Length: 381
Image (cartoon, rainbow, N blue to C red; front, side, top):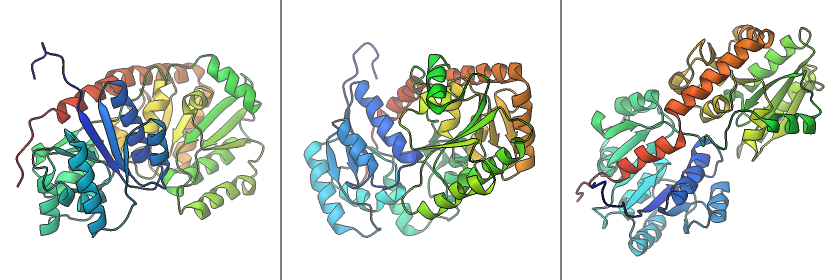
């Protein structure tokens, strides 16, 4: 690309028909908004009953509604084919791998349009059969959100290693700024004072995110540190309501109803994070952990499980502490060190902010993504 000439706006179709509202779907929404702000023409295919569809509609993104479904989908193929020929995109970026089953046939007459796939989660199943080889042959580049996901893709998918690149998620460093007067405002709303040490967790309300370990940690810390308060931020995903109720029922069972605040789903996550002193992320397994870099961006020290994509984010004993997954005792020990040492909290928090500025800046992520989009298209039959 000739840098002396202004780059033209690209027509980019984002595809994700998942009905859930987790890291993948939130990334598609934030990425679409980011691309719009950069002057790109963003369109999308999403499930009309999903929160993602509603969010993209708020952004005035032109939408093709296709419901989440199975693998054999002739109607979805026909509808997507007609729409894609009409909008004539420069690139199609899919985030939900199951969508490849109808999207690849729908793009059969668009052989020069690059198809980019972002893999947000790994798989334990080999995908080397004939059908998967056909699908992944059409994909020009696979983006892995962490190094562990890249290794997983290479081990389980019928693709050459050079076709798979790691591109970490980024955060808006202005939106997730270092803590300021927001902390006072949110604490006042929750009835908390400057003397409280606030320890929080953010994520879908499920056991796999480590909520039970977090609550058992809080129960052990309660008698020793009466000035500590604990925030839970998140709600159940579709179909996981019973599991969420079990987690919430553990609060009174553990005698924590006077110490734990459940805030549910929040749009103002930067403000809520700013009100915390310590961020805890005891997830059992994590492809990346976007909320970790959000917490680090606002200057929080983090205590996280030592697992998977987290290793790309947290530097142990520099930006926080890493502990084995599901190990409540070591979780308690790490959080105790931060409760008792305010100076350590501040040093780790500032180190985390510097790491995010260097490696997880949204602007840098966008530039790298645009380079991937701009790669010369391959010819597909």
